[in-house]
Image (cartoon, rainbow, N blue to C red; front, side, top):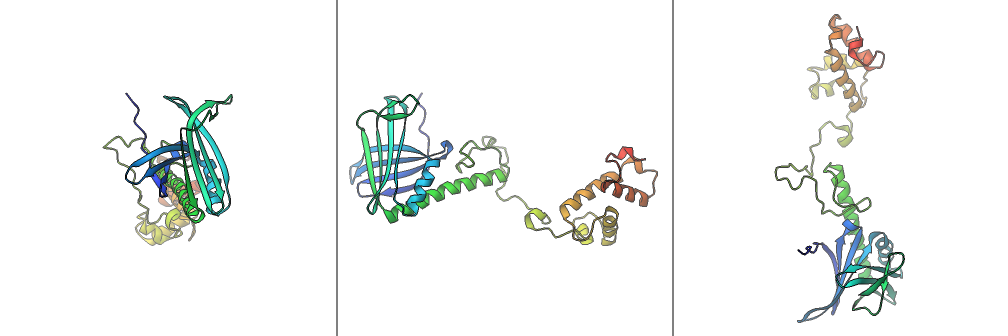
Length: 287
């Protein structure tokens, strides 16, 4: 049973009258796949060649092209196929007002280090001439695509969607496989998570106040809110996040059996002291 050819996104294409160059997403491998071919109008594609360019190498080369700087770059890749070892060579060179991109595929041989180098004439070769203004547009588009995938991966991690299938440095393609995606009953995380109206980390901290406690439903009126704040040593304008933690701990203390013998005011003050660190942290130790 043959392995199906992986589906890749072709996110940028350059055309001349007799040739084309596709940039394809292989970011799950940390690479960009360049696929070039020759064609004649009315007769389809003739020769074709491809190359996998590491993103780490693509960035500086594309950056130079985007700024209109002259480039001279050659990358040797290859691997084993049904026909033996295959050599793939990518050449990018600026000549006068043109950037030439050439891909050659052919027989190869492995070196002692495991690399692949050409072993004879290429069986297919495609060269694409691109004028510098067009080459700059191309380079910026490819760099933007890579950056977009990095942003997509960061967002996926931020919303807690879980690990993704790719392992491309600190980023990866937007086409990811979530661990529970195959379960039709699994509720996927929302891309627009509900933001609490009072969450200071998202919308700005309104600061603690008796009115805030009433709005949050913690107390019924501002007088009780003021008493609670005074008991716990919370001042107007204190950060709400830390204050709410203190209030939560206070309510846990207020209901413990250790305070049954105290009147209400004593219980409040004892709980407040515990929260302020003046009593042991375990309620059962307070008698």
